[in-house]
Length: 326
Image (tube, rainbow, N blue to C red; front, side):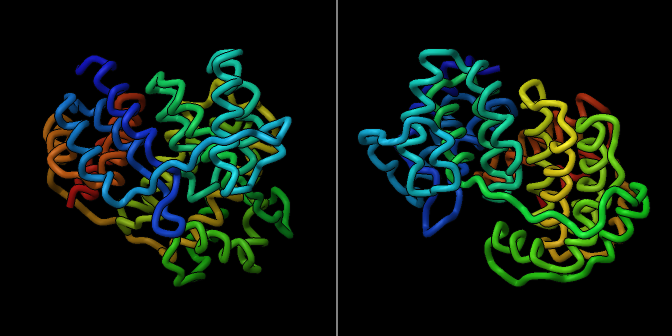
């Protein structure tokens, strides 16, 4: 593997850009850099990704002086990213990355869905990258997009099978261009209220994650849906940050609400999984194909599928990667 110093050089360059561009789209460059590096990208390929993405990104706002005494005072304020980044950067310098994650993730995990899971996803990639400035930027991006989702009208009464069937029959809910806006709109529906808190609890949030990840994989194979892609990469990120996520019953509640809203906002409804009798390509071929193009979402999905397949082998992960690669 290319030395991590090459990744760090590219991430140093990526700090020049803010978390959003073109009125609200999320900056994917740091996440794509780490995913590409893990897929085998060398320094030249990482530099090419920076060169490709830079023209559409917005410059990072200057840090300025912080007026908040605690980062939590700035939760949900997009305009406060620079101030949040400054506060969190100082905390990491004083206490170390692990200590900051242990104190911050339990707060932020109540909004795993924030910015269509991108805050969670970027934080996981940053932690894996071992780059302190990028971790501060990622946590700040998660914090400034933090928001809650409404609760439901039915509580913990459905088996996983019944809940999954009902979710797939939930129907169409939004035509909005932005995935997070579609999630929000779906979360205001009566059907969301019926389902978001209705799934009987698992014995641990990690088991809930596995169940939802399997549903997301089936959903992507049956639809190639862009929002469902984020469910896969988001649930991968949750696993990576798992050591910092407390075993609270509320974690399952927050996670299931996020999944319900995203699935309903994806507008995919019932699914018939695409049948493929051909053996999917091996990982070296899929990785090379991912690095032969610059689509950040494809790079991140191939990376997520490869990781999950390594942990729990299933040919469907290679099928999903091949489907993303088109």
